[in-house]
Amino acid sequence: MQPTNRSSRILLPVKLWFVYLSLIAALGLEYIPSGRVPGIPDWVALVLAIWCVREPLRIGMGVGFVFGLLVDVGQGAAMGQHALAYVVLAYVANGAARRVLWFPLLQQAIHMLPLFLLTQVLMLVVRVLAGAEFPGWSYFLSSLSSALLWAPLSILLMLPQYRPVDRDDNRPI
Amino acid sequence: MSFVGHQPPPIFKRGPAPVARLFAFVAICLVLLVADLRFRYLEVMRNALSVVTYPLQMAAATPADFVRNASRYFATLIEVQIENADLRRQQLASGERLLRFELLEQENAQLRALLDMSRRVEVKSIAADILYNAPDPFARKVILDRGTQQGVEPGLAVVDAKGVVGQVTRVHPVQSEVTLLTDRTQSIPVSVVRNGVRGVLFGTGRGRLEMRFVLADADIREGDQLVTSGLDGVFVPGLPVAVIMAVDRETDAFARIEAQPLAAVETSVQVLVIGRTAYPPPPPEPAARER
Image 1 (cartoon, each protein chain N blue to C red):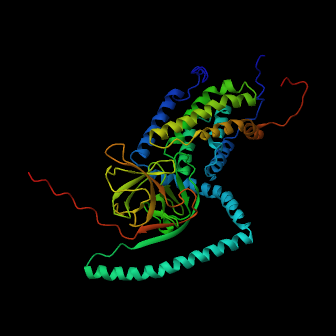
Image 2 (cartoon, chains in turn orange, cyan):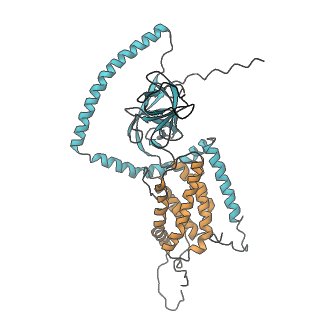
């Protein structure tokens, strides 16, 4: 079947303040102390990836770096650990944007899963090289839940950009 | 790189190419990581950034606090009564020991004065609650609800009713971060109660502790109690730490000694932060070598 660009129906341009507001909200979710429950999604990585795919010309590695540092400080992790992971995530997501958007949301999520795993593996390698212990395989559940949330969160973040439907039979789109 | 795609032709100038920017950012991150993990240079930067993140963290902690308090609110009356009876019994038992302790302390002070020895270090203690486990999954750390404003400093020991839980490693204005004994990077100087043999306990990251660098023929047995030796000048001496579980002398020059922490390291909720009020003078400079 010929792929169609169905998933990106024509949207209003996104407001930059909305992007940053959603990222700050994700940062707040990231800071909620959840103890050691496995499978808590990496909210900032998820929202950052959504914007990197949707707005590859405006949101990229710089934003990833800054928010990565903020997550590092808030979590008491090694300085630069999340920043490194998010910079790589933003780079790949920016580059993959024009391919990924051709697919419907669920297939987009399948594209993003290895990307989230890559960020987690990067963090794991950095910390284990520095002498930390391996946190167990349930650590990777976080990527899975992030990928599961890709579709609902994409719809949620695109809602403000939907233009009201006014049908006009004489207009081609 | 086909997944990442090809770059558009440079019709519009958009700064350096993405690959160049990627390498620049990765280089900065690696420098930060090395500076932080190896040399601990970045505490200033961390504190500066935490001014930005702190309000957000406080806001995010509110729902967790609410859940914690709500579960406490709905504890049944019977549970509370049972707990109360337990506590009364414990208080009676410890009160009797406390009476003897005060007597002994007085006697000790007099004897020390007679012998013209320096007084034992004064101890300060701050009661604190453990709020939650630190979110970093690579380390065993917890967050306390007391910080610099209440007098917590980095390096102080954290104990529960049975023994040492860990050590304060980072302090914020009203919170502090404690590295548990079981963390792989944590170590604590101890001595055996029975005969005073000294050693250092290391966390293994698996809940057990390991006493390293003790000679294979040292007099250490299963069941020996370990207390802090205070030789580091940071911990208060005499706090119970762990009990020896297994001694294996077959390995090589050093015995392989496993110990079990006495405190409920991973589960305790109410703790005391204990520290010296005065630190010992720095060790004397080694005498200049004679030529």
